[in-house]
Image (tube, rainbow over all chains, first blue to last red; front, side, top):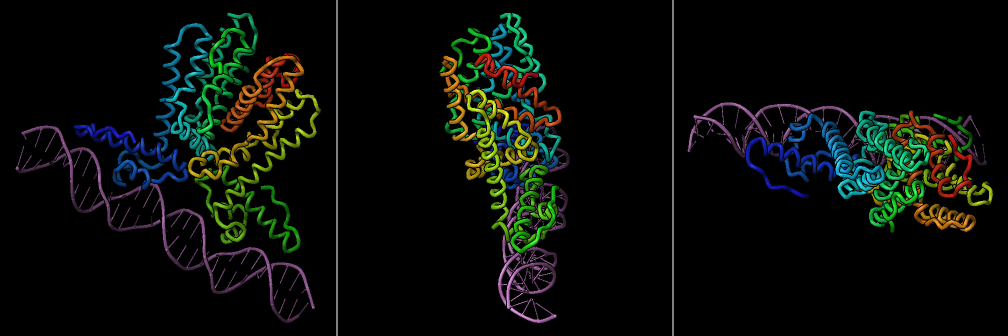
Length: 212
Length: 212
DNA sequence: AGCAATTTTGAATGCTCATTCAATTTCAGC
DNA sequence: GCTGAAATTGAATGAGCATTCAAAATTGCT
């Protein structure tokens, strides 16, 4: 556990403990799944008392939702940032979007553990649905636009919507592969298979990216 | 619930009740997730007594494992069968493999609900790992071989391993899309995006398949 | 129809769980 | 260093859980 030292000041300590609870919850969910996530386990790892969870969060359920919301926010901020610092050519931007999904900040067992745990609960708790759709409308729309620009640039006429769907699915599927077999997962190979796809679509535009 | 009528004969009734428990468990897992799957809920839906679960299965855990094992078996039998009845050209066989994954017998909320529920438990219970990898070695190997044959036939030299990885990931990702948004999911569009990919790789070989 | 073996039942058991809240500790302002 | 407000504690509560097993019901056989 990356436990930052206890800060000074009433409010600061309060927030520090609140964060400890959230971090511990994330860890416990990845370790034990949602079914095995209990307040007892969380407070033991966070090193706070039983009662504190219901002081900071109205209920266990509210805590879980807060964890998910935080994850969703972080993911969105992450890919948006990667897009901001990318060059302006559509190929570079698309490349940045793909690479963002393979960044260790996103592609790691804790983060994916949370996504998969909550997704498995979506049918039971429809309220999670808005938060677990990583590839949500904004990202989808951005990707569609990039493919359209790429078409204009190259004179090709690939169906941008279908391509977006295919690409998103591929990224999603590679996440699943990583989640199930993190030991055997080979990041470069995964990237190579994505860019092989993009390169066949737009010859030369993604040359040398993700070659294995 | 598709409750077949009570059969006659001691052994037959016993097996019929056993099956009712398994079916009810599947339904409850898809409805409530693994976290919300309790013996009480299962036996109520199955219309049997509390005790019967532990008569047929040693424990709740054994019941869950049995459900997963059954799902894994069915999936494997399904794609193997679709491959058996397919034509001999590699393109047809590859097409059969893709279509198998979109067959309603596989792509439905119950089946996917089970996969996703158990996958979310993989870190907590590593024993599930062997059963939740839908796209396991045999299927992967078969796909790689088909891409190799397709290369030989067409004179192209795509990396068969990378292509297999890309295709598997795409299928997996489209499953996820279906699972999260079953209402909006459009099967034909999903197929179209897969075959767009295959068609760009091997021009003409998958013409007219999955066109939207 | 009578009987014994098999199958099924469901109340009882002993856990574990989330949540509560009176009591205790901590701390900023004086 | 005192004081009162704020933050934290953790034992207590009651609900819900998987599992057990003596008793009851069902079945096939004679």
